[in-house]
Length: 412
Image (cartoon, rainbow, N blue to C red; front, side):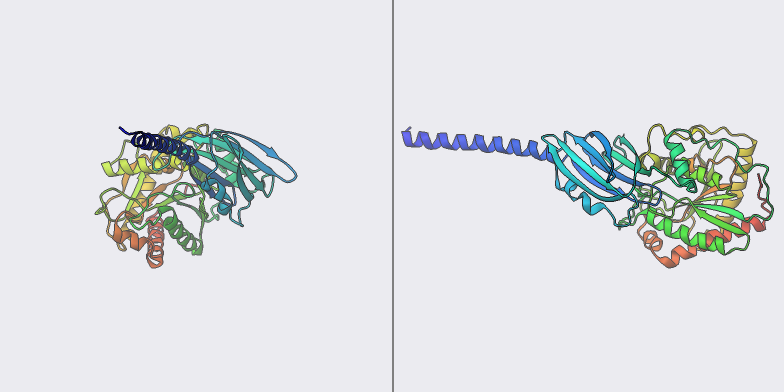
Protein backbone atom coordinates (compact mmCIF):
# COMPACT_ATOMS: atom_id res chain seq x y z
CA UNK A 1 0.00 0.00 0.00
CA UNK A 2 1.42 3.42 -0.95
CA UNK A 3 1.98 6.03 1.74
CA UNK A 4 -0.56 8.34 0.09
CA UNK A 5 -3.24 5.62 0.09
CA UNK A 6 -2.38 4.73 3.69
CA UNK A 7 -2.71 8.36 4.77
CA UNK A 8 -6.03 8.74 2.95
CA UNK A 9 -7.44 5.61 4.59
CA UNK A 10 -6.22 6.79 8.00
CA UNK A 11 -7.91 10.17 7.57
CA UNK A 12 -11.13 8.45 6.55
CA UNK A 13 -11.13 6.21 9.63
CA UNK A 14 -10.33 9.14 11.93
CA UNK A 15 -13.12 11.16 10.31
CA UNK A 16 -15.61 8.33 10.74
CA UNK A 17 -14.62 7.89 14.39
CA UNK A 18 -14.96 11.62 15.00
CA UNK A 19 -18.37 11.68 13.36
CA UNK A 20 -19.50 8.76 15.49
CA UNK A 21 -18.22 10.53 18.63
CA UNK A 22 -19.96 13.77 17.74
CA UNK A 23 -23.17 11.90 16.97
CA UNK A 24 -22.98 10.17 20.35
CA UNK A 25 -22.36 13.45 22.15
CA UNK A 26 -25.14 15.09 20.19
CA UNK A 27 -27.58 12.36 21.14
CA UNK A 28 -26.61 12.55 24.81
CA UNK A 29 -26.87 16.32 24.78
CA UNK A 30 -30.22 16.18 23.04
CA UNK A 31 -31.56 13.69 25.55
CA UNK A 32 -30.48 15.91 28.43
CA UNK A 33 -31.80 19.11 26.84
CA UNK A 34 -35.16 17.56 25.92
CA UNK A 35 -35.88 16.09 29.34
CA UNK A 36 -38.68 18.64 29.88
CA UNK A 37 -41.39 17.76 27.39
CA UNK A 38 -44.14 20.22 28.30
CA UNK A 39 -45.08 23.15 30.51
CA UNK A 40 -48.73 23.99 31.11
CA UNK A 41 -50.40 26.74 33.15
CA UNK A 42 -54.04 26.58 34.34
CA UNK A 43 -55.20 29.85 35.94
CA UNK A 44 -58.47 30.15 37.84
CA UNK A 45 -60.05 32.51 40.33
CA UNK A 46 -59.33 30.09 43.20
CA UNK A 47 -55.82 28.90 42.40
CA UNK A 48 -53.36 28.66 39.51
CA UNK A 49 -51.70 25.37 38.61
CA UNK A 50 -48.38 25.06 36.77
CA UNK A 51 -47.30 21.61 35.59
CA UNK A 52 -43.88 20.69 34.26
CA UNK A 53 -43.76 17.34 32.47
CA UNK A 54 -40.56 15.37 31.94
CA UNK A 55 -39.32 11.96 30.89
CA UNK A 56 -38.01 11.29 34.38
CA UNK A 57 -38.74 12.53 37.89
CA UNK A 58 -37.73 16.15 38.43
CA UNK A 59 -35.67 17.02 41.48
CA UNK A 60 -36.24 20.58 42.65
CA UNK A 61 -35.78 23.20 45.33
CA UNK A 62 -37.86 26.31 45.83
CA UNK A 63 -37.97 29.49 47.87
CA UNK A 64 -39.97 32.73 47.97
CA UNK A 65 -38.83 36.33 47.68
CA UNK A 66 -40.66 39.50 48.65
CA UNK A 67 -40.72 43.09 47.38
CA UNK A 68 -41.69 42.18 44.74
CA UNK A 69 -43.27 38.80 45.41
CA UNK A 70 -41.61 35.97 43.50
CA UNK A 71 -41.46 32.19 43.67
CA UNK A 72 -38.15 30.66 42.59
CA UNK A 73 -37.98 26.99 41.58
CA UNK A 74 -34.64 25.36 40.77
CA UNK A 75 -35.01 22.35 38.49
CA UNK A 76 -32.01 20.11 39.01
CA UNK A 77 -30.30 17.98 36.35
CA UNK A 78 -32.19 19.88 33.69
CA UNK A 79 -30.93 21.81 30.69
CA UNK A 80 -32.65 24.92 29.36
CA UNK A 81 -34.78 24.19 26.31
CA UNK A 82 -37.21 26.06 24.12
CA UNK A 83 -40.10 24.53 26.06
CA UNK A 84 -38.89 26.20 29.25
CA UNK A 85 -37.82 29.43 27.57
CA UNK A 86 -41.32 29.87 26.16
CA UNK A 87 -43.00 29.71 29.57
CA UNK A 88 -43.66 33.45 29.50
CA UNK A 89 -46.05 32.86 26.61
CA UNK A 90 -48.10 30.52 28.81
CA UNK A 91 -49.01 33.25 31.29
CA UNK A 92 -52.38 34.87 30.65
CA UNK A 93 -52.93 38.53 31.40
CA UNK A 94 -56.00 37.61 33.46
CA UNK A 95 -54.08 35.16 35.68
CA UNK A 96 -54.87 36.37 39.23
CA UNK A 97 -51.67 34.91 40.69
CA UNK A 98 -48.80 34.97 38.14
CA UNK A 99 -47.77 38.24 36.50
CA UNK A 100 -44.89 36.92 34.40
CA UNK A 101 -42.57 33.90 34.32
CA UNK A 102 -39.05 33.29 33.03
CA UNK A 103 -36.49 30.50 32.96
CA UNK A 104 -32.70 30.53 32.65
CA UNK A 105 -29.71 28.22 33.02
CA UNK A 106 -28.62 28.94 36.59
CA UNK A 107 -25.55 26.67 36.50
CA UNK A 108 -24.31 23.68 34.54
CA UNK A 109 -27.13 21.35 35.57
CA UNK A 110 -29.83 23.60 37.07
CA UNK A 111 -32.54 25.63 35.40
CA UNK A 112 -33.97 28.42 37.52
CA UNK A 113 -37.65 29.19 37.04
CA UNK A 114 -38.88 32.52 38.41
CA UNK A 115 -42.56 33.31 38.80
CA UNK A 116 -43.32 36.99 39.29
CA UNK A 117 -46.45 37.06 41.44
CA UNK A 118 -49.28 39.53 41.75
CA UNK A 119 -49.68 38.83 45.47
CA UNK A 120 -48.18 36.68 48.19
CA UNK A 121 -49.03 33.01 47.71
CA UNK A 122 -48.93 29.71 49.57
CA UNK A 123 -47.43 27.26 47.10
CA UNK A 124 -48.22 23.55 47.14
CA UNK A 125 -45.53 21.70 45.16
CA UNK A 126 -45.52 17.96 44.60
CA UNK A 127 -44.54 15.27 42.10
CA UNK A 128 -46.76 12.87 40.19
CA UNK A 129 -45.78 9.53 38.69
CA UNK A 130 -46.67 8.70 35.07
CA UNK A 131 -50.36 8.02 34.45
CA UNK A 132 -52.43 7.84 31.28
CA UNK A 133 -50.89 10.02 28.57
CA UNK A 134 -48.71 11.89 31.06
CA UNK A 135 -45.09 11.23 32.00
CA UNK A 136 -43.52 12.45 35.26
CA UNK A 137 -44.99 15.76 36.38
CA UNK A 138 -44.00 18.43 38.84
CA UNK A 139 -47.10 20.30 40.01
CA UNK A 140 -47.00 23.83 41.40
CA UNK A 141 -50.30 25.01 42.88
CA UNK A 142 -50.46 28.67 43.89
CA UNK A 143 -53.04 29.54 46.57
CA UNK A 144 -53.53 33.05 47.99
CA UNK A 145 -51.65 33.60 51.25
CA UNK A 146 -54.34 35.96 52.50
CA UNK A 147 -57.47 34.10 51.44
CA UNK A 148 -60.88 35.70 51.53
CA UNK A 149 -63.10 34.05 54.09
CA UNK A 150 -66.07 33.96 51.69
CA UNK A 151 -64.48 31.51 49.26
CA UNK A 152 -65.88 28.09 50.30
CA UNK A 153 -64.10 26.28 47.46
CA UNK A 154 -60.70 27.52 48.58
CA UNK A 155 -61.38 26.37 52.14
CA UNK A 156 -62.39 22.93 50.90
CA UNK A 157 -59.27 22.65 48.74
CA UNK A 158 -57.10 23.60 51.71
CA UNK A 159 -58.78 20.95 53.86
CA UNK A 160 -58.29 18.43 51.07
CA UNK A 161 -54.59 19.24 50.76
CA UNK A 162 -54.20 18.71 54.50
CA UNK A 163 -56.03 15.38 54.32
CA UNK A 164 -58.79 16.79 56.53
CA UNK A 165 -61.75 16.59 54.16
CA UNK A 166 -64.41 14.31 55.64
CA UNK A 167 -67.53 13.81 53.54
CA UNK A 168 -68.98 11.26 55.95
CA UNK A 169 -69.68 13.77 58.72
CA UNK A 170 -73.27 15.01 59.17
CA UNK A 171 -74.03 18.18 57.28
CA UNK A 172 -73.73 21.42 59.20
CA UNK A 173 -77.25 22.62 58.38
CA UNK A 174 -78.92 19.76 60.28
CA UNK A 175 -81.81 21.04 62.35
CA UNK A 176 -82.14 24.27 60.35
CA UNK A 177 -84.97 23.20 58.08
CA UNK A 178 -86.51 25.96 55.99
CA UNK A 179 -89.49 24.86 53.86
CA UNK A 180 -89.36 28.18 52.01
CA UNK A 181 -85.80 27.58 50.86
CA UNK A 182 -85.51 26.79 47.14
CA UNK A 183 -84.38 23.37 46.00
CA UNK A 184 -80.61 23.57 45.61
CA UNK A 185 -79.04 21.64 42.75
CA UNK A 186 -75.30 21.19 42.39
CA UNK A 187 -74.27 20.73 38.76
CA UNK A 188 -70.87 19.15 38.27
CA UNK A 189 -69.14 19.59 34.90
CA UNK A 190 -66.73 16.65 34.81
CA UNK A 191 -62.94 16.91 34.57
CA UNK A 192 -61.20 20.28 33.97
CA UNK A 193 -57.75 21.84 33.99
CA UNK A 194 -54.99 19.28 33.65
CA UNK A 195 -57.63 16.58 33.17
CA UNK A 196 -59.27 16.97 29.73
CA UNK A 197 -61.51 13.95 30.15
CA UNK A 198 -62.22 11.94 27.01
CA UNK A 199 -61.08 13.34 23.66
CA UNK A 200 -63.10 12.80 20.48
CA UNK A 201 -61.76 11.77 17.05
CA UNK A 202 -61.61 15.44 15.99
CA UNK A 203 -59.93 16.55 19.21
CA UNK A 204 -63.02 17.74 21.08
CA UNK A 205 -62.34 17.69 24.81
CA UNK A 206 -64.95 16.36 27.20
CA UNK A 207 -64.19 19.01 29.81
CA UNK A 208 -65.15 21.80 27.39
CA UNK A 209 -68.48 20.48 26.11
CA UNK A 210 -69.76 19.38 29.51
CA UNK A 211 -69.01 22.81 30.95
CA UNK A 212 -71.13 24.43 28.21
CA UNK A 213 -74.00 22.00 28.80
CA UNK A 214 -73.75 22.55 32.57
CA UNK A 215 -73.90 26.32 32.17
CA UNK A 216 -77.07 25.98 30.09
CA UNK A 217 -78.55 23.65 32.69
CA UNK A 218 -77.78 26.15 35.45
CA UNK A 219 -79.68 28.86 33.57
CA UNK A 220 -82.70 26.59 33.26
CA UNK A 221 -82.65 25.65 36.95
CA UNK A 222 -82.29 29.27 38.03
CA UNK A 223 -85.27 30.19 35.84
CA UNK A 224 -87.49 27.96 38.01
CA UNK A 225 -89.25 29.84 40.81
CA UNK A 226 -88.36 27.37 43.54
CA UNK A 227 -84.90 26.22 42.46
CA UNK A 228 -81.31 27.44 42.64
CA UNK A 229 -78.29 25.93 40.87
CA UNK A 230 -74.56 26.05 41.56
CA UNK A 231 -71.62 24.75 39.52
CA UNK A 232 -68.74 22.83 41.07
CA UNK A 233 -66.58 24.60 38.50
CA UNK A 234 -67.36 27.48 36.14
CA UNK A 235 -63.80 27.63 34.84
CA UNK A 236 -61.25 25.33 33.24
CA UNK A 237 -59.90 24.25 36.61
CA UNK A 238 -59.08 20.85 38.11
CA UNK A 239 -61.04 19.89 41.23
CA UNK A 240 -60.54 16.58 43.08
CA UNK A 241 -63.61 14.35 43.19
CA UNK A 242 -63.87 14.65 46.96
CA UNK A 243 -63.90 18.44 46.75
CA UNK A 244 -66.78 18.33 44.27
CA UNK A 245 -68.83 16.24 46.70
CA UNK A 246 -67.81 18.40 49.65
CA UNK A 247 -68.83 21.59 47.84
CA UNK A 248 -72.30 20.14 47.23
CA UNK A 249 -72.63 19.23 50.91
CA UNK A 250 -71.23 22.62 52.01
CA UNK A 251 -74.00 24.57 50.27
CA UNK A 252 -76.68 22.11 51.40
CA UNK A 253 -77.42 20.75 47.92
CA UNK A 254 -80.58 18.68 47.53
CA UNK A 255 -79.56 17.06 44.24
CA UNK A 256 -76.18 16.43 42.58
CA UNK A 257 -75.91 16.03 38.79
CA UNK A 258 -72.50 15.25 37.29
CA UNK A 259 -72.32 15.90 33.53
CA UNK A 260 -69.99 13.87 31.28
CA UNK A 261 -69.46 12.62 27.71
CA UNK A 262 -68.11 9.10 27.70
CA UNK A 263 -65.70 7.32 25.37
CA UNK A 264 -64.71 3.75 24.57
CA UNK A 265 -62.26 2.19 22.14
CA UNK A 266 -65.15 0.84 20.07
CA UNK A 267 -66.15 3.93 18.12
CA UNK A 268 -69.46 2.39 17.07
CA UNK A 269 -70.75 2.70 20.65
CA UNK A 270 -73.22 5.53 20.96
CA UNK A 271 -76.13 6.84 23.00
CA UNK A 272 -76.90 8.62 26.26
CA UNK A 273 -76.74 7.01 29.70
CA UNK A 274 -77.47 7.77 33.34
CA UNK A 275 -75.66 6.21 36.31
CA UNK A 276 -76.22 6.05 40.05
CA UNK A 277 -74.07 4.73 42.88
CA UNK A 278 -74.08 1.00 43.57
CA UNK A 279 -74.04 -0.83 46.88
CA UNK A 280 -73.11 -4.19 45.38
CA UNK A 281 -70.78 -3.69 42.44
CA UNK A 282 -71.40 -2.53 38.89
CA UNK A 283 -74.51 -3.55 36.95
CA UNK A 284 -72.49 -4.14 33.76
CA UNK A 285 -68.94 -4.37 32.51
CA UNK A 286 -69.38 -1.03 30.77
CA UNK A 287 -70.54 0.61 34.02
CA UNK A 288 -67.59 -0.85 35.93
CA UNK A 289 -65.06 0.33 33.32
CA UNK A 290 -66.66 3.76 33.11
CA UNK A 291 -66.58 4.16 36.89
CA UNK A 292 -62.90 3.26 36.92
CA UNK A 293 -62.20 5.80 34.18
CA UNK A 294 -64.05 8.54 36.03
CA UNK A 295 -62.49 7.62 39.38
CA UNK A 296 -59.03 7.85 37.80
CA UNK A 297 -59.66 11.56 37.22
CA UNK A 298 -57.88 12.43 40.47
CA UNK A 299 -54.70 10.69 39.30
CA UNK A 300 -54.84 12.27 35.85
CA UNK A 301 -55.74 15.74 37.12
CA UNK A 302 -53.13 15.40 39.87
CA UNK A 303 -53.68 15.27 43.63
CA UNK A 304 -51.30 15.11 46.54
CA UNK A 305 -51.05 11.75 48.26
CA UNK A 306 -52.10 13.37 51.53
CA UNK A 307 -55.29 14.61 49.93
CA UNK A 308 -57.38 11.50 50.49
CA UNK A 309 -61.07 11.99 51.06
CA UNK A 310 -61.85 9.92 54.16
CA UNK A 311 -65.28 9.06 52.89
CA UNK A 312 -64.48 8.35 49.24
CA UNK A 313 -61.74 5.95 50.28
CA UNK A 314 -64.24 3.58 51.87
CA UNK A 315 -67.99 4.02 51.70
CA UNK A 316 -69.96 2.70 54.67
CA UNK A 317 -73.48 1.98 53.47
CA UNK A 318 -76.16 2.61 56.04
CA UNK A 319 -79.87 3.31 55.91
CA UNK A 320 -79.24 6.91 54.90
CA UNK A 321 -77.02 5.84 52.01
CA UNK A 322 -79.48 3.19 50.84
CA UNK A 323 -82.36 5.67 50.84
CA UNK A 324 -80.19 8.16 48.96
CA UNK A 325 -79.39 5.58 46.27
CA UNK A 326 -83.08 4.75 45.88
CA UNK A 327 -83.83 8.44 45.34
CA UNK A 328 -80.92 8.66 42.92
CA UNK A 329 -82.37 5.80 40.85
CA UNK A 330 -85.74 7.58 40.70
CA UNK A 331 -84.08 10.82 39.61
CA UNK A 332 -81.94 8.95 37.07
CA UNK A 333 -84.94 7.17 35.59
CA UNK A 334 -86.80 10.46 35.14
CA UNK A 335 -83.81 12.10 33.46
CA UNK A 336 -83.06 9.08 31.27
CA UNK A 337 -86.65 9.05 30.03
CA UNK A 338 -86.39 12.64 28.84
CA UNK A 339 -82.95 12.14 27.27
CA UNK A 340 -84.42 9.28 25.22
CA UNK A 341 -86.53 11.83 23.36
CA UNK A 342 -83.41 13.68 22.26
CA UNK A 343 -80.79 11.02 21.62
CA UNK A 344 -80.53 7.26 21.27
CA UNK A 345 -80.14 5.60 24.66
CA UNK A 346 -77.13 3.37 25.19
CA UNK A 347 -79.03 1.46 27.90
CA UNK A 348 -82.76 1.64 28.61
CA UNK A 349 -82.31 1.68 32.38
CA UNK A 350 -80.22 3.51 34.95
CA UNK A 351 -76.97 1.65 35.54
CA UNK A 352 -74.96 1.56 38.74
CA UNK A 353 -71.30 1.41 39.72
CA UNK A 354 -68.92 2.74 42.37
CA UNK A 355 -68.54 6.31 41.10
CA UNK A 356 -66.57 8.28 43.67
CA UNK A 357 -68.23 11.55 42.71
CA UNK A 358 -71.67 10.11 43.57
CA UNK A 359 -70.80 9.06 47.11
CA UNK A 360 -72.43 11.85 49.08
CA UNK A 361 -74.32 9.87 51.73
CA UNK A 362 -77.23 12.29 51.95
CA UNK A 363 -77.68 13.81 48.45
CA UNK A 364 -79.46 11.99 45.61
CA UNK A 365 -76.75 11.95 42.91
CA UNK A 366 -76.59 10.91 39.28
CA UNK A 367 -73.92 10.92 36.61
CA UNK A 368 -75.22 11.80 33.14
CA UNK A 369 -73.29 10.61 30.10
CA UNK A 370 -74.71 12.97 27.49
CA UNK A 371 -73.29 11.08 24.47
CA UNK A 372 -70.26 9.12 23.32
CA UNK A 373 -67.63 11.68 22.41
CA UNK A 374 -65.68 8.80 20.85
CA UNK A 375 -68.43 8.33 18.23
CA UNK A 376 -67.79 10.74 15.30
CA UNK A 377 -71.46 11.62 14.81
CA UNK A 378 -72.10 12.13 18.51
CA UNK A 379 -68.92 14.21 18.82
CA UNK A 380 -70.39 16.54 16.18
CA UNK A 381 -73.59 16.74 18.21
CA UNK A 382 -71.74 17.56 21.40
CA UNK A 383 -70.09 20.65 19.87
CA UNK A 384 -73.41 21.88 18.45
CA UNK A 385 -74.82 24.68 20.68
CA UNK A 386 -78.37 23.60 19.77
CA UNK A 387 -77.72 20.03 20.98
CA UNK A 388 -76.07 21.34 24.13
CA UNK A 389 -79.17 23.42 24.88
CA UNK A 390 -81.51 20.52 24.07
CA UNK A 391 -79.51 18.20 26.36
CA UNK A 392 -79.69 20.71 29.20
CA UNK A 393 -83.45 21.01 28.67
CA UNK A 394 -83.86 17.22 28.67
CA UNK A 395 -82.03 16.95 32.02
CA UNK A 396 -84.09 19.82 33.44
CA UNK A 397 -87.29 18.19 32.25
CA UNK A 398 -86.26 15.00 34.02
CA UNK A 399 -85.70 16.94 37.24
CA UNK A 400 -89.20 18.42 36.96
CA UNK A 401 -90.65 14.95 36.41
CA UNK A 402 -88.78 13.65 39.45
CA UNK A 403 -90.48 16.21 41.69
CA UNK A 404 -93.82 15.85 39.95
CA UNK A 405 -93.75 12.16 40.85
CA UNK A 406 -93.77 13.07 44.52
CA UNK A 407 -90.07 13.29 45.40
CA UNK A 408 -89.60 14.89 48.80
CA UNK A 409 -86.52 16.92 49.73
CA UNK A 410 -85.17 15.95 53.13
CA UNK A 411 -84.44 19.26 54.85
CA UNK A 412 -81.70 18.03 57.14
